[in-house]
Length: 130
Image 1 (tube, rainbow, N blue to C red):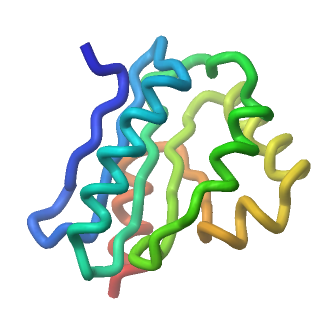
Image 2 (cartoon, helix red, strand yellow):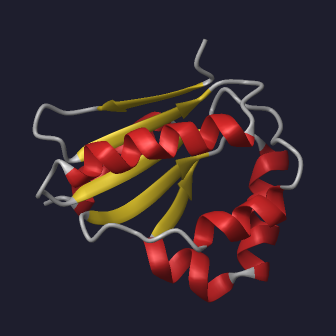
């Protein structure tokens, strides 16, 4: 069973949703990122990625080490923004700490923002793609 699902939200392939289930691990993410890469490369349109972590109450170990590896990955030019759904206050604090450690690379590279619900992410995405 996949603990991370990747799918297009819209038929025009402008919104890519990556949904995390409780218990996901780093190998799951790297497998999902291969799928994300393939889907993004097949599109010429601007894309907003939504990382939906609303079902997660914790993160796998080695967050900062793995996060550094993620920041070193190339970003396809089609990706215009990344919105992360994090309703959990603990996870929000972890991400804020991560942002403080890597302020320029993380937020400037991906135009990254955080919201508390998938509806908020979709609303923000619609505004970005206008």
